[in-house]
Image (cartoon, rainbow, N blue to C red):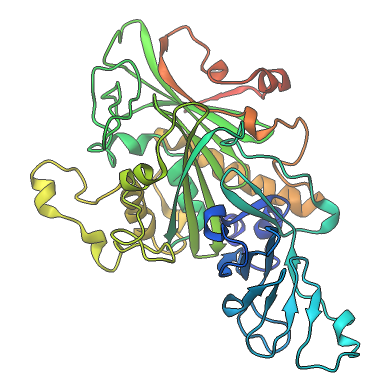
Length: 433
């Protein structure tokens, strides 16, 4: 990539093309559990370089407002949440979920400012364990749809949230990189003579020792789907181990499931050099308990994370890497799959220089992602069309990834694919070089 293309891909603040493209989608502001209580404390969030607060009012409605009060710019994170509005502590100005001024305590009752002033507010919805905001132009707002991990109201959903100190694109590239899991996560995903990926205690046994997968990519209307094809331990002469991953533009990845739960990641840009990492485990009937999921990922508030979801293990303290544990057999000496990943992503720098990398055949999905999103942002600049918003449209709950051992003659592009997606006819298969 050229430096100019790298900027197009990575920069999301202000009027940057990628940030404006993302604003044509519903965006994850925070987890619903963070604002569960009506009239509870407002929650700070930062999205695409904007500082915002999220709150649930007395009636249970969700508001997403600019953090700075329009009066003197004091933070509304300290505001009183009462009687269906946020009241700034400084002079008592009060705002409802739509940004309308309810009261101006410091102004005369007949002040024209009461109707003239309107605070920044974004439409908000809830679904799949998240509060979502729409930050784009009103005329481009589409109806909110439940995310992939909320196919039914009864689906069991567990969420890990962690701050990542680097650009969103290098985080997302890590999520779609199937090849690294055989090495970086070798201790958490041990090789075993099993018939598919398992979730057992604190490990995910997997049925292949093959560290060099063959990759196949298929473009779709929502982004792309790709397969990592490995040699299995069992029936290697007649079968293949296939793991498919979906990139759902612009910031979601559906990664291969195990026998207990399905998996998705959202790698949402806080700003140019910070990302909020969400890892969702869900299932229609099985799943994993929220506490158990956070314990498995070493992502619990207290031992692993500060209350603002920043990590205890950081680049500055070398992620508390345990060299003694490495000597005893742990591959990385770093606790938790997400932190192992973040050690790699953050060590690349705030925004990595992609112009001097040495890519190989295992990086096909990475190359495809970059090409896909640079082309998408150029198209958005040309005609305002945002990737993931055009036809054929496939409801997110119909999308899914796949993992399993299958006969060699199996067409990977049909595995785990819903009828609606097959009917939309994705474009031709792009074989790895």
